Image (cartoon, rainbow over all chains, first blue to last red; front, top):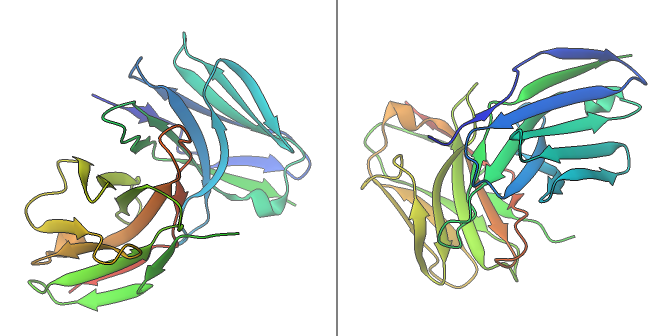
Length: 113
Length: 114
């Protein structure tokens, strides 16, 4: 069973703080990992992709992947009220060249001004 | 910046009616996908499409659903006889190449079945 697990939250952090979002996945063959941001009523917006163990930084965002622990995380530095959204973790399997995404339920982040 | 577009943004239909949801993927993308998200639930994969045929489909994608790319630009999802439980947001997504695995989503179509 392919599962992606996230804490549903809400996770509340003060403005300027670091928000830490976590995700675990059950399928060891998972190859690609993504973080999407979804505002209420809107579509998922890609923030970060990560494919190999370690850290990947893009501006205020850092994705961390540990395949041995089947764990991927997203750090948001200097959190802003505009970062308040639901963050979706998604993984893909390399099946038939399809790369369809399996999503977690998402973690709702609230950044308090 | 190129975007995936979807029409309509909101579709209201009666149970048992057929609906067609339309998507225009990014022009040089090769793989296309449909996902759905029931209110308050997670995003779920429906079907992937490559080289004018279905590549993979989920258990949700039963005989009531079909997809096609009729004219080289539009990518459509048809639901033949809608049910109340088909009410959801439907998202189209696409990727450029097999090696580039980042999927870009359209704005979605909210389908309401009454």
